[in-house]
Amino acid sequence: MYSSEKNINSILQQGYEVKIGDYLQRGWEIMKQNLGGFVGFTFIAVLISLIPSVMPERLMPLANAVVNVITPALSAGFLIVAFKLIKGQSTEFGDFFKGFNRFLPIFLTSLVSGIFILIGLVLLVIPGIYLAVAYSFAIAFVVGRNFDFWEAMESSRKIISRNWFSFFAFLLVLGLINIGGALLLGIGLLFTIPLTSCAIAAAFEDIVGLPVSDSTTI
Image 1 (cartoon, rainbow, N blue to C red):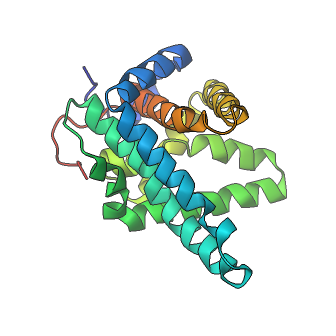
Image 2: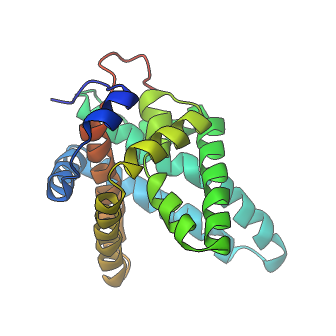
C-alpha cells in the first residue's frame, strides 16, 4: 500500500528515516512490474542522448541543445510510470513520455535548479553539492504532487535538508549502482538507470506520499 500525501510542514516537524535498503528493494519490486517497458524506454532515452554524437559537426550544437531541453521530460517518465505502479494503476508504454504533458514546469525545475547548483559549485563547491542533493525530489514533486517548479524545488530542499547526510549516502549508493552498470559494457545501465529512478520513487512515496485520488495523474 502506498502512503497518502503528507503535509510538508508535518514532515519537517516529525522528521523521517532514509531507508536505503528498503528503497532499493522496493524500487526493484516496482521495476519488475513493467521490466520490459523500463528497459525499452531506457534504451530509447540512451539512443536519444547519443544523437548529437552522430550528427554533422555544424549541427552538433543544435542537436545538443534539443537533447538537453527534452531530457528532463524524458527522465520524468521513469517517475510517472513508477508512481502509477505504486498506486496500482495500469500502465502503457506511452506513459513514459507523459512528462511532455507537463513539459514547462519540468523543464523550468531542471533549468533553475541546474543554474543554482552550477552557481554553488563555481562559488564554493560545497553549496553546489548541497543543492544537488537537496533538489533530488524536485521533479518528483512536479509529477507526483502537481507542484509548480519553484514550489517543487523549495519543498524538495526543505524536506531533504531535514536529513541531508542520509540522502547524500542514498544518492551515493545509487551513483555507484549506475557506475557498476556502466562498467558492464554500458549494457547494465539499461537496468540500473530505471532501478535507481524507481528507488527514488519509492523514497518519495515513503517520505512524502502520493495523493489517494488521481487528481494529479499526468
